[in-house]
Length: 471
Image (spheres, helix red, strand yellow):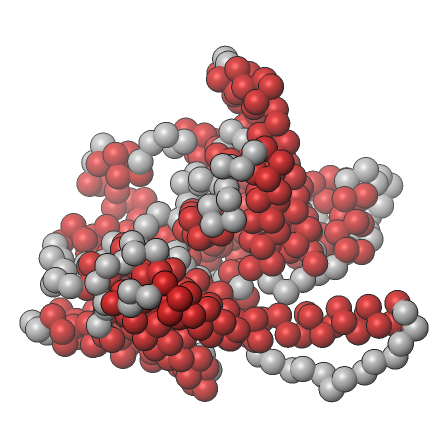
């Protein structure tokens, strides 16, 4: 069930109506929990067992860690929690990838090995809810989670339907305290939540799917025919598509949660206004970058053991970030590129740090350079294999081939990308609430009406699943 479907709108209205009819807080939480399991089960009912297993294992291990005093037993419990949660994720997401690479390795030595094919359907959202459940185990082990959680509160924390499929990845300390007392819901919550839901749908349905996705698909489907202009349009279009698609989902999730009185953390903060790659990862998929920083990067030493170890840790963290996105070497390459960008940035800042704090013109130059390199790094992320990625890179220099996109499509992509960059640069250090609060009611309503009409006008077109559903 996707946010941009009629089924979800009906589901959301029914759950919202039932939620507000109830007066008992425990009953409200139970309704949200059952609704979340229904939301997930409508996709593939048997995989509810995996969600339930991950939830109960993490809760049981985490609660034991809270009360356990023996350091030896705590380490055993931590290992059980890690193996249990990551084992399920590894089997369903990476077993085919690992087996395929073993076969290729054997073939390199002239050994023919043909095991039975593994045909496993990847459970939707497994990377997100696994990291969320695992953070509870790690927080309990580190003593940052000092109280055991109840079954209902923790189960709702892991499976809360607005962010279950594609985040944001919420921490225990951010969500479970909200479950411990009734949510105070005002008209402001409903108004803002509904407005964010409409905004997120506009970003996804209109900007990502209607304007950008068709052009991007044309370029990547015809990569041997695309000239330099077509390819440039395609890769710029994908920068916009993946942002509007994923940030659109996160905006919808935050809005829907707000309608129930729950606050979810921001997942995007105008990332294409970033000056440098450290800044980019403070603005893009914030919940994942913070998770990797706190539970991986710092755990393996961070920047406390010398520069060489710091650079190693940066690269390792970004390689794992790439692999988290999918079982493909293309995602690993994407992560490696960002690891390399971060290392180079750290080296440059240590030698020429004053240039990053220079004139507005210099900062704008670094902003554009950051956007260009990020856009180029999306090529392996979008490409199904290295052959396609290499041809997309080389076609940036290719001329004398047929156009695969029309003049109107090129203009549309140029307008959307330019407008996106201009808006993000303008909003770089601002908050949307402050901008909206300065607008009159008439203008606010007019903007919402325009977005709603735009969404409905493209409703009959091709429906594209959210990009991050595959992760």
